[in-house]
Image 1 (cartoon, rainbow, N blue to C red):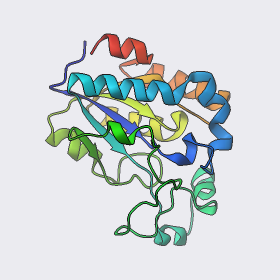
Image 2 (cartoon, rainbow, N blue to C red; image 1 turned 90 degrees about the vertical axis):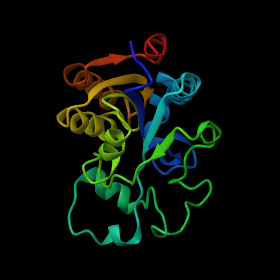
Image 3 (cartoon, rainbow, N blue to C red; image 1 turned 45 degrees about the vertical axis):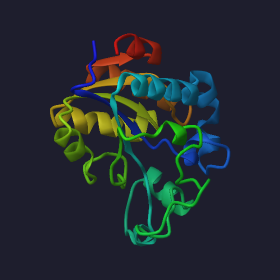
Length: 207
């Protein structure tokens, strides 16, 4: 069973880029999102946590102009930079409404004073943002993990949080991925790495 004293939700990249047709990555994820029912499950999970008074953390993806000057990187990283995904003009200018970097519209009304948005993760994992600091400073030792993409940012966050001593459960139908192969590979790894891999309904039943 979970409790709202030491358990929180962490969502990676609940943004337009992979979750909405306006996003540059939506073509890669659309079929799997519909198959798994990703967005409705994510919103259902978030609302249930709101109702029970849990903290929710977002670890977003943002790229700034200086990031396009990087001299090397992997294929996924290069794809995002080449297509100007998750783009912001600078760290001090707001996210453009409806841009790929923006949070999906359905999530915005659910953000409350128990929502904490960390600094951006720059590749896939949270090693270079303040997510773990924010979790620890708020007394969180157990994480319910969801978001995009299952085999990349979600799995990278899972691995890093587990290595840092957090007890991590993945909501395995509140994630999306670029196709069945990527999703199934992530499910296999969730089974090996996470404390549990549960459906949204299974998570909610234990809140």
